[in-house]
Length: 598
Image (cartoon, one colour):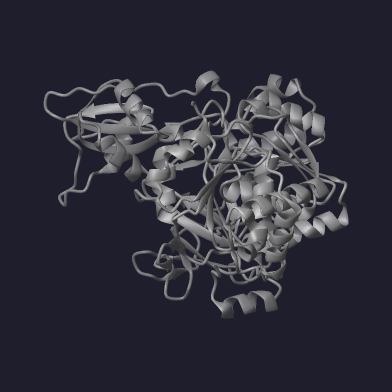
């Protein structure tokens, strides 16, 4: 499936903004350079999520495992352009799975391990997925068995594959399958005759957006690689680096920020999942990690509790990356002053926005916490390869006018070789999110900021209306409202986010109950868990109210609800019912870095 317009692709290749490589050819190059150098390591706490002992693969071993997997998938009928759901935690197997699908020309659609039957059925139906790759066990859940139970609800789903022992009889076990010589030759022949192209779709990731149904974001080899150079050049990665990856490899942070940065630099990738602080610190010490990503909440906790870092040697670290929530200047200056470590401030999206402020281009740590470089703005050049050919501008949504003066909040719009081609739909790409000049309307609000008289920075103002970001994971209120509204005790509902010091936000459900009915948070939580809704999406606070506040047109006034749940008095919203604490168990780490309950 080719994604971008041929004329655009020709321009990207002609100018060197794209390279002729794919994920598969980059892997081959790494194998040729250093076949016996260590390439990828399993999480040290692998047993919490997957069967088997932690693995340590060289580039040659990774290539061999990917090749074996290619044969198994091909023999089972997987071909180019087939869409395959992948639900695996960070592991060596996940990396091999991506490369195998890439080599076949199939399209991986990765789903977070927290997703249950509700999300898998919803998204798998939209995709018409041909196959599903998972594990026999993810945590305490028998994932392969649950996948088999979904067959009647996913009529297009063909083969189910699983890593690990004990899969149901109709599931192909990827660990134990041993292809014959004939099967291997047939698969190799198929791959050899297939012309790989950087414009081939390699993944379809998902973004919550602000609507009830998540949006499918297809990405080609070329635009992924163009975007990932920003995550190589910022931390100045080389083959000598050791990367510790605590973010799930299902979207921009894990794929562009870690996996592709590793692949382009030829460094060593240390996987981590589920998040465990002691394991994380031990991996830094034992593997001599030089670069890692961490959410602001975790960095803040470690900075304010020095006894945490006192139990590990982190002297191998030379730089950190963070994002997904605003950073404070004191966080960046604290890490620099106490540990000599600079932090890259990362702002990105699955669709291709990538504004990473590193110490070379935003030297002052305080400025780096508040501002982002104006990548793509006219008159500026940057030593970051992902900015080549990239264009950005601010547009006033009310007037449609481009904003070039400082202090005027407006929507940032983007265009170029690292921007996706449009949302995937069963009938083709949806480009309704692009304006008449081909710029993608991100919905994110920035303003130009002048520092020392030079307007070379953007300042982030706000994000898409209503979207809740809990520990770096996006939650669509509309989706949760639809699920809550189905409860028999609920007459009306609205879901909003409320501030949380550790996670950034948590979600609260305001509910008007049916006459004579009652509802508690435990009732609601149990109901949603029975429907196999991902744990991080389940509201952690419930407010029973007499009526939802509405404007004259009947639209719910969510600003009033946010003010109420944040403790402010709100006219027209008679709030009753106690708030329920949603503090994470142990108070240790953001939700996206903790194992979800079974």
